[in-house]
Image (cartoon, rainbow, N blue to C red; front, side, top):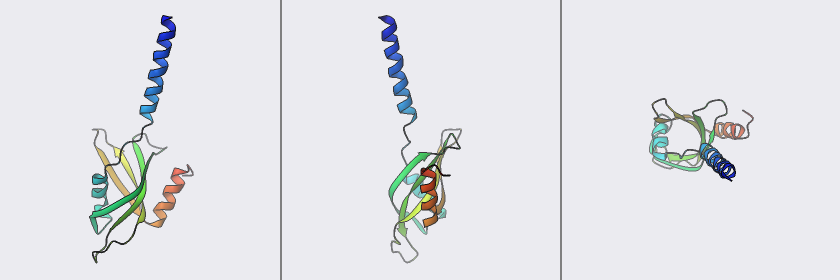
Length: 119
């Protein structure tokens, strides 16, 4: 009986551990907006939608971020939602940083291919 209880506890912990390990990190929109500083005219006005995050198969601490962003242009008007792609990395000191690779239709296509496992 004791062996059976130990086995049940081990299975429960294994399932819980694997569920926790596969949980995707939350996206910090403020940090993402800050990473858009170099890409957008007015990153503070950035609005996000369809945000997705998934593990990069080639790096342990790297996540791919895809979504759409809409921000004000130099005339002060919103220019419309445009696909973007970036990375979320955890540094050795535990700090999370974001890097935007591109804001364009091409970024959206690359994101889709990465998500489908083709890249």
